[in-house]
Image (tube, rainbow, N blue to C red; front, side, top):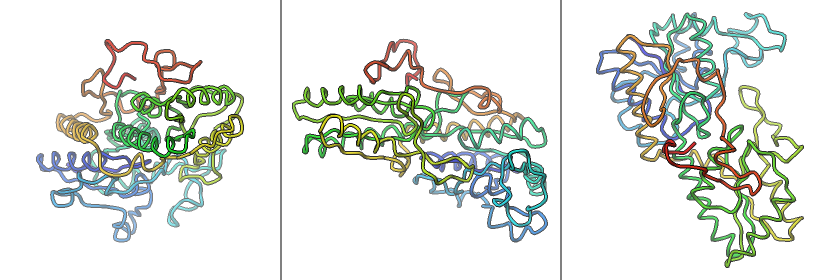
Amino acid sequence: MRIGILTGGGDVPGLNPCIKAVTRRAIEHGWEVLGFRRGWAGPLHFDPDNPEAGEEHLMRLDHEAVRTIDRKGGTVLHTSRVNPKAMKEEQLPDFLKGRFTPASDGTVDCTPHVERVLNHLGIDVMLTIGGDGTLSYSAHLHRHGAVKVVSIPKTMDNDVFGTDYCIGFSTAVTRSVDYINALRTSTGSHERIAVVELFGRHSGETALIASYLADVDRAVIAEVPFDVEKLAKLAAADRLENPARYAMIVVSEGAKMEGGRVLTHEQTDESGRKRLGGIGEMIGEELTRLTGVNTITQSLGYLMRAGAPDSLDQMVAKGFGTLAVQEIAKGRTGFMTAVRDGNYTTVPADTCVTGRKRVDVSAFYDVETYRPRVAKVLGMPMYLY
């Protein structure tokens, strides 16, 4: 048995422990593990007709290769947001240019090439660790039927549909709470209003839980458009009610004003998505204009996903990796590892593309006050959402 493994999308703490768990459990069964570098870009850039040149896109995984990797954040396999199903011609390696017929949107589907590469390398099961983008392509391969796939969900936003928990979420929340509370000293010293922007393109769960745990004054999440004048009045009142004369606001990068749009940069990633950012700065400028109080704006950005994983992310990462190999050993493929109702389980590999996971606003957010609101705890999962 030869297992292929890759990590795609944004890096999160916990990827390396998962890779290590998969590798060690697989070796116990006498299997080989072959890592692909840079997510789906690895198989995409491997040329079966020139395999020696393609070695740079591979990493042989054994006991020595993974011995200490779980002590570090990020991923030793590196990552990208490449989606072989929707590539622009100019993004293709030279040996693939001109081989595929463009779709109406100008992109090409390189799935036949990916399948050829995996077959050429003797991959029996392809194990992918990623978020919506990476796992949606895994689901495409699964539905195509030519490749056996197993998926493991990871994302700071915790928004992969079909699981209550994704690798990287706990560390992102922990980092956010630490930095939010650390920023209180400067904000309070200058009697200002602080606006802290956190990652969260479509889901505001990370921002909402970080706000809840750090007990900030107001939280603006991606799911609920906000009125900046109302927010300014609330923040000004919060500041005056605080004996230290400051206020703390947290905002998801994907939040938008009522009637407005999500703010993006012109720069795009490999999948063609514009990079989000700027909502925190915009809110800070508006709050200063409307309240007359100077603001501190801070985007935590990659600090949320920097460094080693916390204990929970290590535990879930190793749990998912072990579960994946145990089920493969039973002859099972075509599934995604998951946590549901506090238990490890599996769901079909294409579950992630059958719905979307967002904050239940009515249960966990007060749209009038822009604050977390936990309607009930009894019977809820550990992380509430």
